[in-house]
Length: 128
Image 1 (cartoon, rainbow, N blue to C red):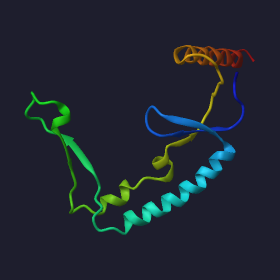
Image 2 (tube, one colour):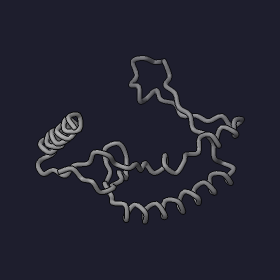
Image 3 (spheres, rainbow, N blue to C red):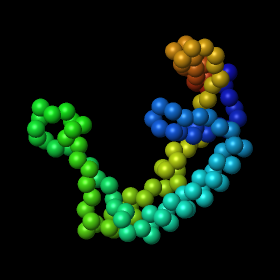
Image 4 (cartoon, one colour):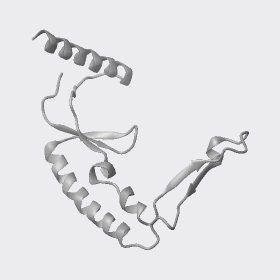
C-alpha cells in the first residue's frame, strides 16, 4: 500500500534508521537545532579542534589496507575548519521520503513486494 502521508527518514548510519511522521519530525528538529547550535559554538570556540584528514600509505603493500590508514591534521590550516563544519542537514542525516510503501513479510519478501508496488505505481503514471 502506497503511503501518502509525509514521512522523514531519520538515519543513524548507513544501514540503520527510522521513518517518522511530520509531527514527530518537528519535535526532533527543534532538539536537533538546539544541539547543532551548541556543538558549533563548542567547535568554533575551542583551541584544540582541527580539520581531519586521512590517507593510505603505499608501503608496505603486504600489510592490510586498514593498517596503512593514517589520520592527520595540519595545524597551520586552521581556516580549513570553517569549511569542514557540517550543516544541520548533513550532521543529522534527515530527508523527506518519497515513494514509501507499507508491506508485510520477511525482509527479502517485503523488499520484493515494495518493488512490485512501486513498479505498478510507475506504470500506472505512464498510462494516465
